[in-house]
Image 1 (cartoon, helix red, strand yellow):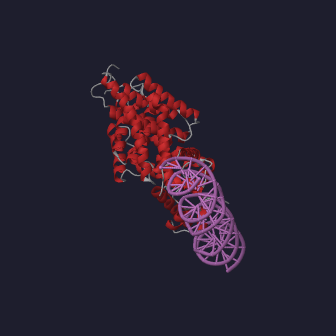
Image 2 (image 1 turned 120 degrees about the horizontal axis):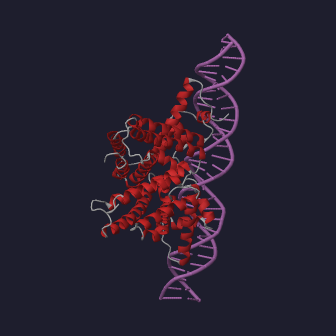
Image 3 (image 1 turned 60 degrees about the horizontal axis):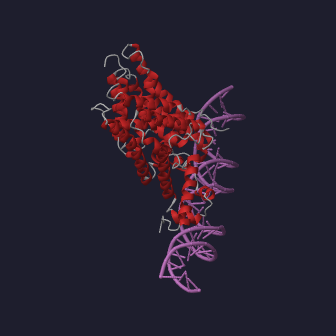
Length: 204
Length: 204
DNA sequence: ACATTAATGGACCGTGCGGTCCATTAGACG
DNA sequence: CGTCTAATGGACCGCACGGTCCATTAATGT
């Protein structure tokens, strides 16, 4: 019976502790650099607990992917509601850049980084991350659609395409930020996406 | 004496065979999924040959990073010379999208993918990949600068920023292509970057 | 030709790791 | 209170993997 869902409150707490420990280690050392024994130690759990709640290592990593996407998107939830104004869009991008500065431009996007490590190895994890990116893109698109509904975007503007390009700017900008250890890379990329949106407004 | 440069022609051939085998395996199974023994087998080499030409596993992976960037950029060299015309830019983006379709949208960008796997683990590899991205961005920028020199770009246009945004669109678009297994993701991202360049021309 | 160095083959080693197993304890529920 | 299941502890296993070592063969240079 693999990957049992916990029934007890204690069980839920243990499972959560394991996932959180694994997510932390993955963020610090990458997927390949994270051993089950290290997870076990940080989560103050035993080996049998790992295999009680997860079928195998891949199953745990899928849970990590889910947890990471939830956290990344959850952290932006408040900003997502304001993506229907120019000020809101700017505030959102500013927050992303500030976060990268705080991190020392290390690690890139947690979701994008996991994608590079898991997508080709485990299709389940890939789908989990794809879902996370979908939710992210939807949040942007819905903001732009609200702008369009208020008549603030030109009729020929395509919120879907604009949202898509904005997300690619986020991911591409974060990759360059990571490789070059320079948060300014993300700033420039986001400014380009923002310019595309500003140019689609009714009165420029 | 770690990481000896081969002196003999035979030595150079062996080293090259090893790097190529390693690069292939990394492309197929990722960095973590590539064992030295698998490299040894595919390269028809012995263990001592690996350690004759490379200090350790990380050293080999740095060589792989270098080889991969050289190949990616080399494959586009012909297209890079034409990046100073709208047709040339379009031909280049078309080639990138076609290549992804041929690959079944798997693997993403070889450079970007390696970045996610190596950047946080080995600083030397990170710098190698950063250098590759620099060369890539320079090729784009120089094309735009030639356009500017001919007066085809508005004076306030910034070739550096445009090139940077184009590269982030490539990387971000390839990441979404990989995660969603859909080459169209790259197409949309590149169209956005292209629109930014078209909008910076003298007569729209 | 001969000395010197490069290149090669492959056995060998330690261990870190994913995964299994079983015995024990805690808790839910009638 | 008694029973049944969930939850836990941790010893144990097999092996794949990175890395070492030494003996042997091929080139190179003078």
